[in-house]
Length: 179
Ligand code: 5GP
Ligand code: MG
Ligand code: MG
Image (cartoon, rainbow, N blue to C red):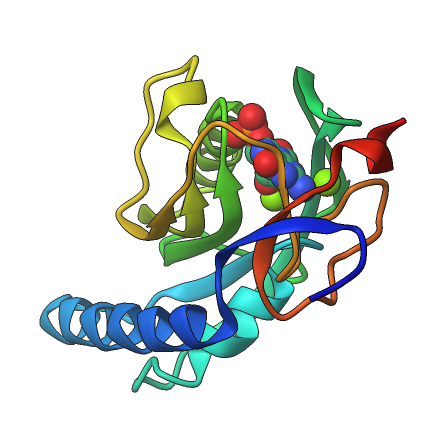
């Protein structure tokens, strides 16, 4: 375990096993649907999860990325800003949005609205983590990896000041790291 970590909440094995289950479920659901989704990862936090998940999505999906920001330090503030947009059009196409964590839900609500404005025929969401206690807007993911308590978590894509994204597990930092 990294020296700055207080505890691990979700292990690497758990993430891999759950991604397998979610990939299977998503493959089944979109096999019944008429069209394949464009898988859209939100940079940078979703990258490790997206990479793990798509191994288990048994469909010829395309992937794309968007970079939005709504978060500074450990408090969620203000609206969503698009730093990097999609490279292709989503007009008439269903989108499967991949997120690292849903906290207040504001990012997701804004990005979902944005994609629908761009003409996406449907927007579904898969998030590695969910912190339902922190929700301030009404939005739920269609697929959730793990529900986590109301604590600031890092690892498997999630950062604190751009650090700890490369850890293969999700955990909580020691209090002194924030001082
Ligand atoms: P929301 O708009 O739902 O409040 O925030 C979503 C974004 O805030 C996430 O995509 C993530 O980047 C960041 N975020 C929310 N909670 C946490 C957390 O516990 N740890 C980290 N590292 N980022 C978080
Ligand atoms: Mg994110
Ligand atoms: Mg962040």
